[in-house]
Amino acid sequence: MKYKCLSIAGFDGSGGAGIQADLKTFSALGCYGMTILTALPVQNTCGIRKIYDIPLQAIADQLEAIFADITPDCVKIGMLFSEEVIELVSDFLRKNATSIPLVLDPVMIAKSGDLLLLPSAIDTMINKLIGLCTIITPNLPESYELVGYYDDQKQIATKLLQLGAKSVLLKGGHNKGWQSNDLFMDETGHIQLLEAKRINSKNTHGTGCTLSAAICAFIARGMPVIDACRYAKNYLTNAINHSKDYSPGKGHGSVHHFYHLWPILKSLEV
Image (cartoon, rainbow, N blue to C red; front, side):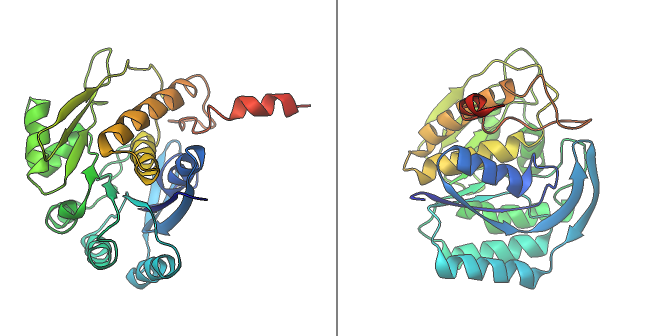
C-alpha cells in the first residue's frame, strides 16, 4: 500500500483496457490503484457498442472525494472523450496536483476503430492538458492528430514536446517490420530508443492503457521517467508475449497483466 496510483479514464467491462487494465497493472507492479470514471463505453473484445457520458458533476465529485482523502504518488490519464471532460479534469489537476507527476495517454481511437476522443476535443487537449503533463504516450496515429504527419519519429517527438509536456514516449507499434520500437525524448534533449521484437499476436487490446499505467506505477515507485518507460516497455512486452496464444473472447484479447505471478498459483490447482 506504500505506492498509490490514480487512473482517470474510461471503462471496459471486458477487462482488457481502461480503468480495469490500469488497476490490474498497478496491482501487478506493487501499487495501490484508484480510479476516476470519465466515460462508460459498452464493449467487449470485438469492439465498442455504445459510449455513455458520465455527468460532469459525477466526475468532479469523484475527483474531490479521492483527493480529499488520498494523495496519489502519480496520476495516469486515459480516455476523456469530450472537451468538457478535458476542461474539468485539467482545471482540477492544475489546482490540486501541482506536485504530482501526470502521465497522459491521449487515447483517440480504440483497437476496433471506434472513436474514444471526439475530434472537436483535440485542440482542448493540446491547449489545456498536455502542458501539465510529466509525459505523454501517443502512438503514431495519435501523434499525427496532435502535430501533423512527419516521416521522422525524432521530428514528431520534437513537435510533441513543443506542445508543453516535459517528455514524450512516441509508441512505434503501428510501424511495419519485425521490431516495435518506442522513442523517448525529454525537454533536456535526451533521446533514447526503446527496442523490442514485434510479437505476432491479435491479443493486444489495452496495450496503450497498460503501458501508460505501468509508467505511472514505476514513477510512483520513485523511478526517473526514462527508467519508468524502459521498465514499463519490458513489462508490456512480456505481458503481450504471455497472452499471444489465448484470448478470453472472440476478438482482440487482453495482454496478461499477471504473467509473472500466476505461475505461483499452479501449485494450488486441484
